[in-house]
Image 1 (cartoon, rainbow, N blue to C red):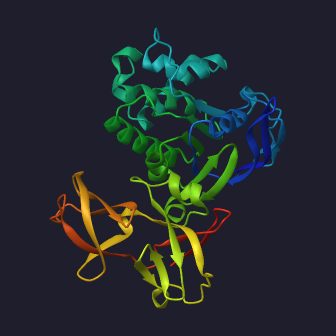
Image 2 (image 1 turned 45 degrees about the vertical axis):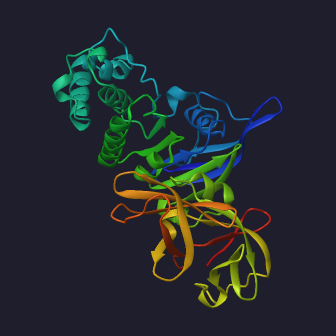
Image 3 (image 1 turned 90 degrees about the vertical axis):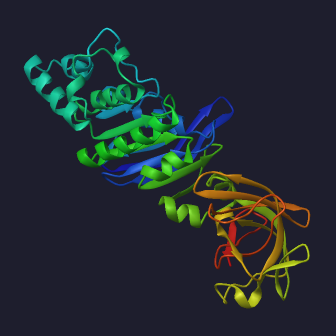
Amino acid sequence: MKISIQGLTKMYGDFKAVDSLTLDIESGELVGLLGPSGCGKSTTLFMLSGLTDPTEGTILFGDTDVTRIPPEDREIGLVFQNYALYPHMSVLDNIMFPLINRKVPKKVAKERAEAMAEIVHLEGLLGRKPKALSGGQQQRVAIARALVKEPQVLLLDEPLSNLDAKLRVETREEIRRIQQEVKITTIFVTHDQEEAMSISDRIAVMDAGVLQQFEKPQDMYLNPVNTFVANFLGTPQINMFDGEVTDEGIFLGDRLVRARADFADKSVEIPNGTYKMGIRPEHFELCDEGVPAEADRVLMTGRELQVFFHLGETPFRLLTHSDQRLYEGSKFCLRVRKSQLMIFGEDSLTLAKV
C-alpha cells in the first residue's frame, strides 16, 4: 500500500503542529518519522491513523482518499508505546481480540492468531498473561494483535520507549524482521536517531512541524541539507564552528584545515568569507603531519576513544579506534578526511562538502 501525504497541516488554535507536510511512502517501505519532542511526528501519525483530523491537506492510501475516513475503516494496525494489552486476557486472547471484535468465527480467529504468534516468535507463550512477559515480548504481542487483522498499513508510535537499552536493540531488530516478513508498509515514530537509522528504509526528519529532509539513512547522515539535520543526526554530535574561507583555503583561527587545492570538488566556488562549518567526530584522521592539537580529555567507550581538544578557542572532539594510545595531555596531529568538511550558508542550508 503506497501512502501519499499532500500538504498535511494541523492547527491547534494559532499553533501549527504540522505545517504543509508532503511525503510519498512506497509500498512495503519502513519509514521512520524522526525529530525532537514537539516536532509534529506523533501528530502526523495520529492524522494517518484517523485519530486526529487534519486542518488541511490530503492522505491517500493507494488511490483512496482516506482523509475523512474513520480509523476503523482505514485498514491500519496501530501500536502505541504503552502496548495497551488487556491484562486479564492471555497472549492468545489478546492477539485474537480484533478478530473476535469483527465477528470472525472463533476457530478461524484462533488459527490466524496462532499463525501470527509464530511470525513474532511467541508460539510458546500463548497461555501466559501480559504481566508474565518481558517488555519486548509484550511489544511483540501488541504488534501481533495489530497485524492479525491483515491491515494494509502498520503505524508505530514510539514503540520502544518503555524498554531498557538492550531490549530496545533486540526489539527494533524484531520489528524490522516482522515488517519484512509480512511486507507491510510501516511508519515508525521515534525521537531516537539510532533506532530510526538502524531499521528504516528512509527517514523523514521534522522540526517545528516542518519536514527538513526525507532520505535514506546513510545518505542523510553524510549529506544533511541544513544545520538542523547535521546537528540532530550523529552521536556524538557534529563539531560546528565558524571557519574562514580565503584564497589559500579554509582556516580555523590561524590553522589551515583544508587547502583550496585539496577541495574534493575543484569546481566548487566558495567566495571568501566567514561561514558556519561542520566536521563529524569520526571524520578527523590522526596523521604524522597535519594540524597539531593536544588532548584535553579522553573518554574510552569500548571500541572507540572520544578525544576532546581545542583549536584556538574552539572546542572539538574526535573519534578514533580504542587501540590508539591517547591520554589527557597527549599531543597529536590531525587532518579532516577528504569531502567531509561541510560548509553552510547564511540560510543554514548546506553549500558544499570539501
